[in-house]
View 1 (cartoon, rainbow, N blue to C red):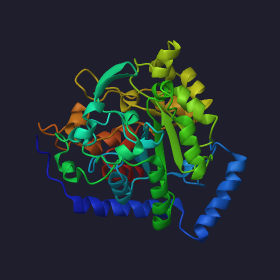
View 2: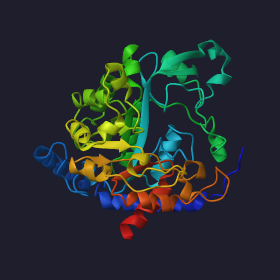
View 3: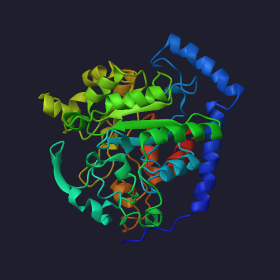
Length: 401
């Protein structure tokens, strides 16, 4: 394994705590009377503008009240803890992240759990469990063949016997310290955790929730949207001002959710030449390049409040991997009333544009601040980050410029 650059957790935690305090003050959502007053204001605002399209930044309780640029902890603080664990989510809050992301896949018995993929070979210790050796199989998911173990072949009780581990140990060697510490959380556990953390910290805990491979799961009788909507209603996160975004790479999943709940919705967008899998199945010839045109964005804005494009759709890279000139995506999306939450910022050289890499170690940190400055200058509303403390400092620098 390649050893990354030295890091300073104590400094990171102090900076994160400072960011959390600043966010708490800016949000105006203190416990007690402040919360009651904010709720009353939000109900009035929702009645006047139920989807929050006209709301100004920093006002009310809806998504327009979030600080801009908004820092979304990608799978939690996955740069420092194994992804999609309560430990990763909690550390992201400690660092000051504004929003915490969850990806949802189902178990055999219909529970929604937090994993980036239904293939859990690389993110759990399932391979070390001889009792599950026979579950290893090969499946085609969204046209791609995978061999391993899959959540839909396990009951929740069985899945809870597994422990989470670091997905990319070669790059994030220090994260392996936490292998085996946490189980795979259910989304209901996360909702309860978020409510408890909100009471403890005196502010709403925002979530950014993705339905993974929704067409595939619907085809095997494990549709995600209805299960997700039921949980959101049970925990009061189904309203237009609720502290949750719902997202998917499949526009039809977002459209389905729009009919079930009033929560803010985001369409995720991959590479320009790709097609959403539901488009492939439906014979829809449109690509992502079609969806990021003014006409495509107008269509998205008819049922969603935002987009989550790759950073490359905001600023493309040249043949050498260096950042080029920004596209018109930010301007065009904002013209349709859509917010933009691009993905994903990471600190390591291997994930940075070539002009912001430093040294030859791919696992070492490069100039993440320089790269974030370029992205923030385009006017994006937020960013998904594996390293929320870095993104928060860059956002503060940008606001103070």
